[in-house]
Amino acid sequence: MNAPTELFAHIPPNILKFALVTLFSLLIGLEQRRLHIKEEIGSLFGTDRTFTLIGILGFILFIISPDNLIPFLGGGFVISLLLTAYYFQKIKIHQKFGLTTLITALITYCLAPLIYTQPAWFVILIVVVVVVLAEIKQTLFEFSKKIDNDEFITLAKFLVLAGVILPLLPNEPLSEAVNISPYKFWLAIVVVSCISYFSYLLKKFVFPDSGIILTGILGGLYSSTATTLILAKKSKESNESHKIAAAIILATTMMYVRLFLLALFFNMELAILLAPYFAIFVIISAALSYYFLKFFNNKQQTLPPQNAIQSPTNPLEFKTALLFAALFVFFDYITGIVNTYYGNSGISILSFIVGVTDIDPFILTLFQGKWTIENSVLGMAVINATTSNNLLKMIYGLSFGHKSMRRPLILGFSILVILGLIISLFFI
Image (cartoon, rainbow, N blue to C red; front, side):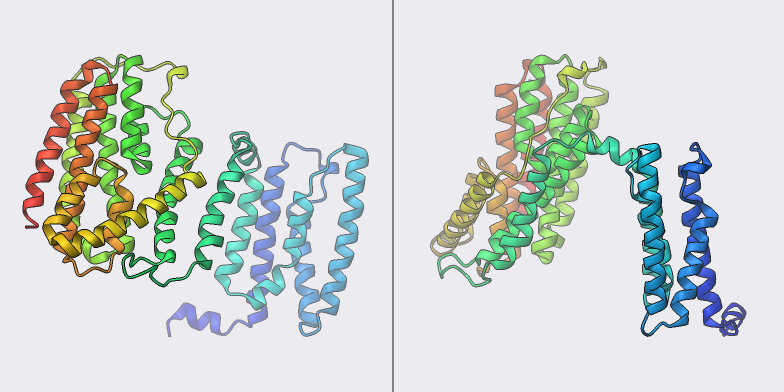
């Protein structure tokens, strides 16, 4: 046993716990003083000394009778009466209705039983949360102004998807033809929605004025195909085609990141198999984006605020979720039939075909499927699907984008498509 441990071993436990109550109470009180530093002293309930004494009072009344808690509860009742009287006086004299300081005082009073009954890390967590919440009042106010009426509905939809529907679904296969259980395919919806929702929150609240490049990155987490279409259309209103082309390629970079995260969640072995090949795609596509951004055109201008590119909106529409579920079951059924009658070659051809649609449902059926398909064949199918999807995005970019983007898009996607075909050969 080392010296510090021996020293603490000889200190009575009540002394250590008293010191913690005093320290935490003083810390909360100092935060209250800093928070109200510009207010008149007479208008405050109390700050550092008052909060420290409240914590000490709670400690004393708790250790008097820790079994029945009658003194502690009685003291809490008296403190509550005093706080109530102060609150009504504050309303009457100063016309202020905030309860934050009063609730903080009650939490401070409860520190003693927390320290005696809960782990130290949990008590520290409570103190930290109290201090932080008190400090970020203005930040929360500014944040709340960014939330529109539909934001909580969006959050409610996600909670319904993940916390209500998912646990109620059976985990047994639908049939021999469709060997994915309702739980598994709804779990896929939840995971994809989670990634999309995370990208949506970043775009709206963390980077609301994100530029073209950041739009490509965040949009790629949501849907690289949809982002390509949006950016391509926007190129006709901008003289920064080189930057938009770089953003489109970056959206494809994030597609590989998203698919790798899904593979990690559903099929670790396949994720490990795909990791080096996805790493190559990420490096090459990121390098292409950098080249288009820095060397393809030296013209650097900034779009006016009204022309800011908007990424896809609410990613949690129930119609979208139901369509995804339908596609998931459909691709699972088709993949099973193709695998039964046409084997590996059929899976390879199917993967090229579905690349011109939403590839997530198909790829997730590969990640979760229970067919007797080797991981090498599944890996080939994933690569083929992304390759044909890249070809589709190039067509979208050429069809809907400004003609000045044709050269970078043809160059970038041609490299990725050829690279995909070459890598696909390694799985044969």
